[in-house]
Image (cartoon, rainbow over all chains, first blue to last red; front, top):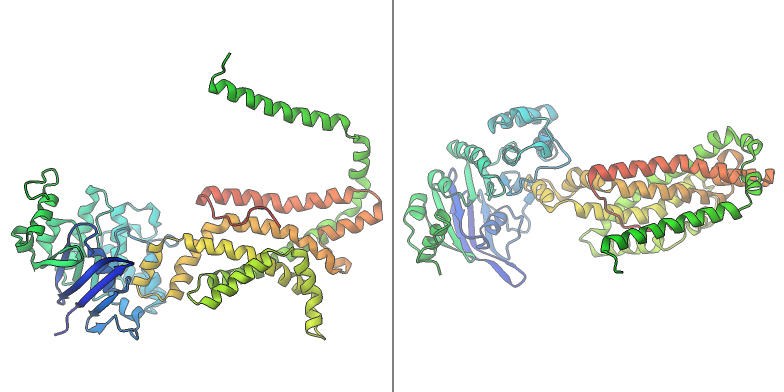
Length: 253
Length: 269
């Protein structure tokens, strides 16, 4: 069986800074995998390597059995099947919500306007933004903007969804709406790779959790085990800080 | 007695106003108003310029400027994209173009196009409108390319990343996402370029023309020769302001609406 995502010996350096130092992961179709770890541990870079927004320095990336690191691959065609959600939403500022959802459908998938708008509206209903079709991105709250961004990715009918800290830029009271949409997506069987600091979400929704530190994967296992009963010292230290930020405890280095 | 900082500022500001008023009063007292009025405000001469100053001269100024601006904008966009290209020779070519034509007086370019093209391609009769469109466009493009480049670079990186992550090619992302946003950012400095080009269109004078092709400066000069009064200069000048002041106000309004623009052009040529 082909993996939904597979990386083999993935390395990425920015100048002399080595951000990824040999990452081997596999995500199966329908699986929800959360990547956790301190900022600077390389988790966002890993995610951005999966759809080649960052070009790996060494190693291979496969998505749905297609090698994206192959220099001859049609990367634009490959990305149509990979939805990506950014921390800063990145809704197109020159288009309203409907335009944001239809532009790639029309210009990339070649759907006609009527079909694209129908797909857009269906996906906006799904994320609870049926009444914001004609709103401009600047008129949306952070939570609404992020849900619109999720709907934009879904409108392309992706096989895989990448989430890069989707709730980190949101006010705390808006986080729930976005996580709710992601939870629903997971229940529908979407394959998801999620970089997040939301431990509750990771514990409840993810099938598997990867803990990253200093450019390598330290721990990889079922979410309840990695979060509930980590085997590695570094995972324990990290989780202690995240789950109880005011008490660093005796494990604090 | 030491003054406080605020007192000192007030005294300095008062001094500045004083100098301004003094200069105005001196000018008003010493200038020969009678002669000035006779030279510049001969109503008969002014009346004689109408309606042609509007129907022919103003119209032609607008037409030449619009043609030059349109051609320059298109050429400027191409050069801006070349300037940002990953292909070295494109970048060098664009840099060379910008440095070359930004450094030349518009007059030389107009003369070069107007007289050079027929020399280079014997037998071609260059339509005056085409010649001016090309010449003004070449000059305008050098300025606009830098403005457009700055505008493109001012579009946040995340916009391109989002577009690429949806499967758009670099070209599609540029065309549908980046350029529309860049143009919104650069509307104020672009309006400024349009104003400068309006004034540069006066250099059409040097290409010679029939009566119906005269723009404001040329028309004013001819009226000047016939009337022995300087009034035509004033009338032509006011006509330029009819075009440029609304544009200037528009530019300010756009700037307020979209925030500070990107400017790469300081003073005019």
